[in-house]
Amino acid sequence: MIASSARSKSENTFDIDLSNGSSVKLLKAVGIYGANASGKSNIIRALFEIRRFIVDSNEITIDKPIPAYNPFLFNTNSSNEPTEFEIIFITKDKNKYQYRIAFNKDEIVEESLCHFPNKKSQEIFKRGNEKKEEDENIHIIKLGKNFNYKKYEIYKKIPLLSIFGKAENYHTNISPATTYFNELEIWNVTESNWVRRLSDYIKEELQKTENKHLIKQIEKLISEADTQIQSLIVDSNIQIKEIETSTVDDKKSINSLKKIEVLYGEHNVYKNQKVVSTHALPFINESFGTNKLFALGGLIVKTLNKGGVVIFDELDSSLHPFLVSLLIRFFQDNHPFNAQLIFTTHETFLLNKEFRSDQIWFTQKNTYGETELFSAQDFEGVREDIPFEKWYLGGKFGAIPYVNNLKEIIYYDKKEVE
Image 1 (cartoon, rainbow, N blue to C red):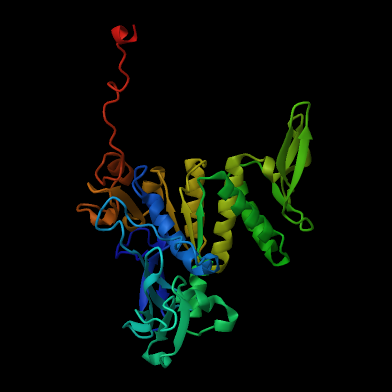
Image 2: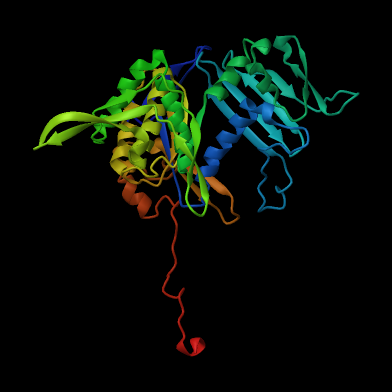
């Protein structure tokens, strides 16, 4: 998400002055392109897994492997090696951190957190090989020199960073890093159940008294998308839940889940081509595309209001290209709190319309089945005025499926049939 020195579409970038006196230019949004099975989703999943490992460490059990452990199986050198993550990020208080963790299925073998109070890195803690003599399942971790080498004892499968999200363990220098991971919004919006969960989450937010402004903002976004919805109506007195109902006929009983709706879209009712009244349609009865626009757009608006990072896998799934472009443009145009958007997509329409070269990334598998991630600006001859869509579809960046001749796949031999 670090911006290049390009001057094109400078409105797609923003500057942050860090607390240590340095500054950095960052991108507001990045799109990741690539063929199916090229590894796009694994980029998103990597971020999802490291977040879950830290935020949901209470779900890790003694008798089961670490859930995030997933070695690369197509290479004998890596199939039993630790899984490793490293991420450099900036918290809302404008402090820069570097976090690294490596683990096998049974324990964490490495973990470290550094910050940058000056321009040089300073170690906050580093997990080594020190274990409790009476019980090797307990790791002993020391904070760095500037934190008086304070010791923590922690179970071998639990990240030390995870404990600083609890109030009783609050630490001035460490807890903001834990909060950063907790506030990451990562959603796989290719699946309807994830879209429904996100939609319910946004509906719950709209029911809160302090979020009345959020309703109007999402309402404006949806009306701009030409959905014919005039306004949104939220019932703040109904709790979102599911109830079980039964339908019985002569042969069997069918159990189903029925949603109690709290959100309605107000539509005009016409007579003789004139508006005579309005009708409040339960939002669950709107099209899937409209529901997805509400869910994604709602999260984007919420993130823009407070800052943070929102990540979508296959943003364009079930959305018209113009609506995808609308969401990207809306995100980049409304930016008071330095929010960032990362997403995977197949929608090439965006390449010429919305992005600089440093906002365009690709995934491609090499000969050995390993995913490589690279940017459009890594190629020679790339200028900001080239037709990116034409170049990409023409194969100049790679990261597209190469389909062989399909004529020989279906073979029909009359004699063999007989």
